[in-house]
Image (cartoon, rainbow, N blue to C red):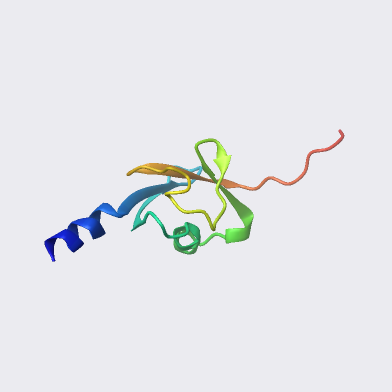
Length: 91
């Protein structure tokens, strides 16, 4: 029983999700679980539309179906939330 409990704790990771205004939330999740759930939860709690933001980890966009293990995330790593800016082009 003790080994199962230790394994369950070792399989968890704390991920920090922070937006452009330094609003921060901490999520604990399994290393093998897709990030989509915490990303959607962050947006719901902050009352922002999930489709209007992008998520950045280590300088690259985060695919919602990727897992912390696939991204080689460690405990207390941070995902940044950025508003999508449309436009550009010719002036």
